[in-house]
Every structure is written in structure tokens, then in C-alpha cells.
Length: 214
Image (cartoon, rainbow, N blue to C red; front, top):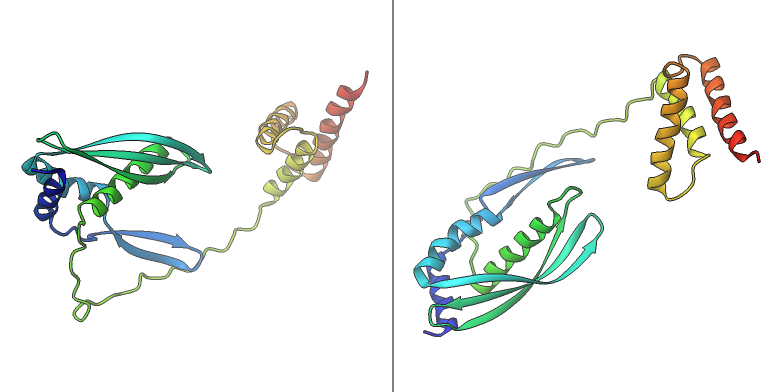
């Protein structure tokens, strides 16, 4: 059996995968929901078909591109059968995550769309005449809370500290926190009135005046 015949057998064994999962997205205009098919749905449908038809899928990452908050992977999927024939399907997957899951998300996206397009997996049929769609309930956007007097006093301290920092924005943020922590500890806590704010601002200015002296 050729590899193309094996792929056709897998396609016939899978059937449709519907968008049975629902997710919600909160925006400034309200909360909206949408239906989707996840990588778990694809694996659950694909696994028994691959076993039955004697087909394997081996991923090989061929290119990695780091992007903002994520990664873009180019993956070669080597699809083979028990006769030893193989064919390569190349797909790109994008994953964004500020933690450590960007690569996994990119691999999942690449695999999911490789499976859909290689095996021509259909979407479950929806009878539009008998289906009712209800928009998600819109929630009013929350208005920003006004700053408290304590937050306003600390904001003045942070601005003063920021003005004496150097480097990249990230480096300046770290240095600002260090300066603020140092002067607040020196004065026994956050300023409780305008007089204490002015005293802390003077102390910050004095810190850097001393540094500039030969």
C-alpha cells in the first residue's frame, strides 16, 4: 500500500470533528464567546485511526523564530506507513505565552492544522435552519478606580526615583523599585502626608547629588 493510500484510509476512519468547546473573551465592549476544536479533540480522533491504518507521524522542528511574547516554529511532519513509504508535510505554528508554554502552543497549533489539512478532516455539519445563536451577555466595562491619597503620594515618590534612573525601561523599573524601597525603609514606611513626601523627595535628590560629587 502506498503512503497516499494509507493517508486516505486514515481520512476515512476519522470522520468529522466538531467545534464542541466554548471559550469566552472579555473586552471593553463586553464578553463574547466562540466555539473551537482543541488539540485534544484532534488527538482523540486521530489516534485510533493511525493505529488501525498503520500510519506514524514524526515531527521534526526545522526552524525557530522568536517573536514578541512567543515563538514561530517550522515543523516537518514525516508521515509513514508499515510498507516503509514516507511523505513530508511542512507546517508553521505560532505560540504566544509570557510564561514557558509558547513552544508547546506553537507545536500544538502546527500539529492540529497539519492533521486537518493532510487528512482533510471535515467539520461536523451544522443545520443552520434549526440552530439558534444567542449572543453572549455583554458586561459593562469597569471604570478605572480613582487613586487614593496614599497612592498619589507614592506616585510622586516613584516619579522622582524614576527620573534618576538610567538604562532600558526594564532596568529603570528595577532601579526605581530599589530606590523607593530604600528611602521608604529609611523613613519608616510610606509617606502619610505631604510633608513626609517632600522629605522623601529631598532625600532622593540628596542621594544622587552625593553620587555626582567628586
